[in-house]
Length: 256
Image (cartoon, rainbow, N blue to C red; front, side, top):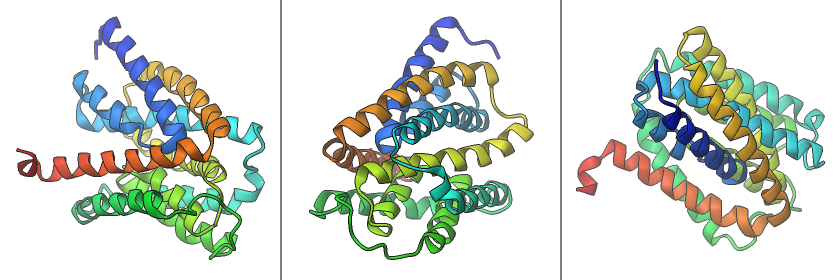
């Protein structure tokens, strides 16, 4: 597939901005998927290429958060394992069963998440008593959201974040850091299936990966320094935008 240098440069910049946003609140695919489609890449290859480049961005943010001491991978071992397994199962089943029911439910769930972060006054301050043990959280949230990411995907970061805030009772910055660890885990698991199917456009994906890696590192740094005052409004905005995008795709007549 031949793509001009100008378009590759545009995709690099889009990936950088998406990586920056994704490291803070998730939702970078709102920018990268339409950009890849606009570049003339077929839908299946677009999804695979987007997963390739986003894996580098989530790795970059994870690395920054780990080095900053916000998260220890040893504390998340079981959640990482469960997320990986869940994502692999989802990526396998999406090839066999209809995702229609899930796609119709997720916009409402994203709206609920945005309203939760918008109107719950104490959300994201942390310090409360966890509602599940670490192992129970790994088995339910890790496996469940990992499955969702492998099966469908949009809003995965928001789902992980609200899980860490509402159930694990973490502060928003720590929740964001842990979210990126599990985001990276589910990305890698799903990417394995795309690679085996020969779907990623490697030249495009790797160029975007460089931009996404740089953008995600900057976004992770901003998340650490600005913290709750930035993460909370971004989660609200990104969740609402993803919900509107999905509703528009499912019901275009509503927007005419």
